[in-house]
Structure formats: structure tokens, C-alpha cells
Length: 292
Image (tube, rainbow, N blue to C red):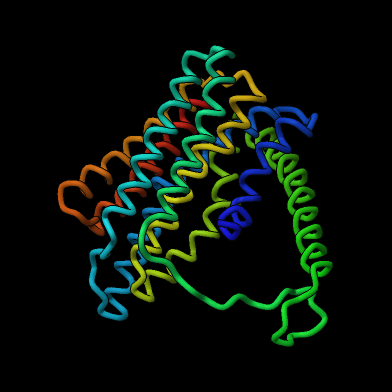
């Protein structure tokens, strides 16, 4: 859980910094775009990358083309994502502040229940951790608390500084190319912050750890549908336009299709993962065309 929270910090802090701590032009649009972009990218482009990796490893290593996953684990993630994210999008359509203020804590409670079910499920990995970068030696004893605290503090400060710089860069790019900041943020932010982390899924697919690989994506979808969304619910008017709702609809539709196939066949097919690239490309064309 600590690793998941740590790696989710960049994509979580960017909307928070953009909305609450940045006075730049379009900062709220950039924050909302980052919030909506992560679930959309995970449900489409990240799945496409995983499907492409399966095809590549089939050709190189002769591994099975279809992933072998624990359908119960992946299905549970998709069910929670669909419930959480659908509720948030409906709130963005009706845009009532009372609904937003009520929904945010309900999402947190639901996530706590999701974490409880995850910990209760069987299975797990025991792996050795790397030494701290700031630890003065690589001796086997545990590092002192001050070295742990120093590395956490420096890492967090670096992420916050990077988030502020990133928000300003997105605003500059949006003005330069003449597209709405929300659209630019929706497309760029998750690719820059979330997609590189999903390369872990490619490595796990190569190692034959298919449930871990796809669960890395679906678990992130659940997280992104709760905490960043809560930032939007609580700190913005959460009024979603047509482009925003379209990206959410594609994310929900892609996830629902995967869940349907999982329930039908108890597994996933490589070509279904590749469909994520089609959904992503279709939205990029639509978003750019409707904004020009």
C-alpha cells in the first residue's frame, strides 16, 4: 500500500497543486484535465501497451498470447472502478455542491472497504527492498529514522516543485497550440505521470506475472477514481463539459467491456487489450477536432 501511495503521488499532487496552489491561467482546467485523464489513459492506452507487450513477447519468447489472470482479483478492481467513477461523473453532470460534498467522503469509505477486501484476499509477494539512496552505507542493518525521513521529505518536495513547473508548462503548451488547457492536460498529464509507472506491467508480463501486471493497472484505476476525483469534487465546481464526459464515457465503456469479457470467459484476450489503443486514438481525434 505504501508503494502504491508513493508512486501515485505525482498524478495526485498535480491536480491538487494546479487547483489549490497555482494562480496561473487555466490552472483549474489543467487540474480537472489531470483528474479525468488518468482513469481514461489507464483504461485505454495502458491496456493497449499491455496488449502490445503480450504480442511482442509471444513473438520473442513464445509465451502464451492471452494473459493468465486471476479473474476474481481483476474483476473486483473493475467493479469498484465502475461504481466509483460513474458516481463521480454523474455528480459532474448534475453539478450540485451538496452532492459533491456528500460523495467525496463516500468515495473514501468505499476505498477503505476496497483495501480491506484486497488485504483479505489470498496471495502476495515478498520481495527484498533496495537500500535508501540517502543511506550513508549499504550495510544490512535498517537505516536510521532520520535518513528515512530525509529521503521522504526531499522526494515530496521535489514532486511538489515538479508539479508546479508542470502545471505552468501545460498552460504554456495549451496557449501555444491553441487548444483548451483541459484537453491538453487530459491528454498530456497522465501520459507524463502515470504511463511510465505502468512499464512495470510490461516487465511483469515478460516474467509471466500476468495478474500482477494487469492488477497494477486496474488497481491504479480504482485509486484514481477516488482521491484525485475527491480533489475535484471538493475544490472545484466539478462542472464537466462535453469533452470531459466523453473521455469518462470511453473509460467506463472500455472497463465495462473488459469486465463483461472477464465474467464471460474468466480471463482476458490479448486483442481486447489492444482495443484500448482504438478508444484512445478515437478520443484524441474527437477532442482535437471539437476544440479547433
